[in-house]
Amino acid sequence: MEMLRRSGSTIFKICLMFTDRDPENVKDMYQDIVCSLWESWPRFRGQCKENTWVYSIAFNTAVSQVRHRSLSPMFLPLDDDTYNNLAEESHNGLIERLYELIDRLSPPDKALLLLYLDRVPAREMGLALGISEAAVNHRIERIKDKLKTLNQNTI
Amino acid sequence: MNKNVNNVSERQPLNNTTLSEAQCGEVSEKQPLNNTILSEAQCGDPLDELMTAWQQHSDRIEQIAGQHDLSHIKLAPRLFVLSSRRRRILSSLAMALVCLAAIVGMVILRQHYISDIFEQLFFAFLALLLFVTLIQCLRQIFLLRRQPFSFHLSPITFHLSPYSRAAVFASIVVMFLFLAVPVQNGRAMSHGSPSHRSAALTSVSFVLSHIQ
Image 1: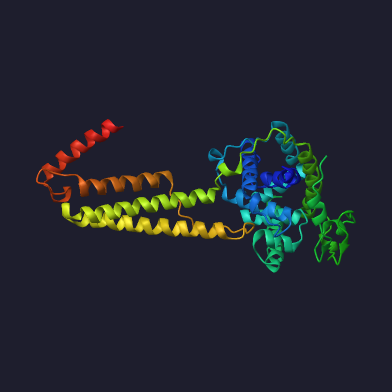
Image 2: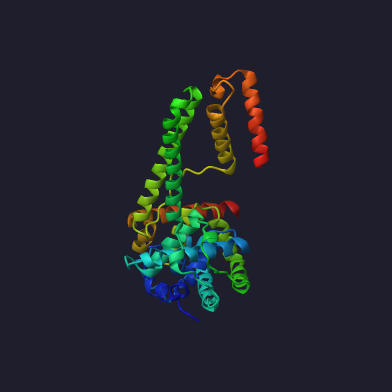
């Protein structure tokens, strides 16, 4: 439970980034990610930092859209107040603009961008995503170029 | 408000990066800037402004996460929770066993019917399905054994849409009908006369309609 508390902001950000910010989709994503973390927690042996591990599991879940809720007797709702606060925050002018650009990226690029925006070190990024540090830096530059192009095209 | 300690402790000074804060004279207290590449031309870049706004957005989400009440969460005992990957392994194994049983049954019962093209097609189909399910099973076992924090997108997935599944099931039923439905002279459908086949199909339809 403490791990869930510490990882709350990371999970919320992934839910907002990998969905269309629709209430039901965000809540579904939140429940799936927490379920995955709960199931995978016993296998975490400290091979990396806890936050890196959370990123990895959450990204896997978000990308693969695992739906095992019907067979997992858990109750992990995202309450309406929390969702409303998140929705209000995500509809801030500039942030809404950023989400519109992010929606056009592929899931792996979204995952890498979130880690970059969260100032995660390149080494931890590589560990979370299973790629080398050099590949991380190269792909980040490519993503930034892509976002710049998308931003200029839509202005 | 709970602080996300891990996030704060992991944030590193940004080295060898292009930053909007430095370019526009705004430096975050959390991230001292070392060896940054500054470009006057990039000052005011809309993309950099968006990234700067993300920092405030992230701080606000941390506040919301701190206020999120987790006390109502009910987590089931882990013993009763099967990971999705383990479930896929079990379903692949079950499907493989069914295929294997069907193949063995056909081999045993071969003496009781005339082998023809339909029987061979059905046999080939079962063998192919057995092969594919075994490959899927081995793949899932390999993925389960892999380091738990690895992140890989599966490049190939054997996933049938509902319509495809219905078509596969209908094909199996038709092949089975031609193979196994008896006709008056004791031979399989494929060797029966048209009238025999239509009579057999009529009786099968009657049975299926009652089953529904």
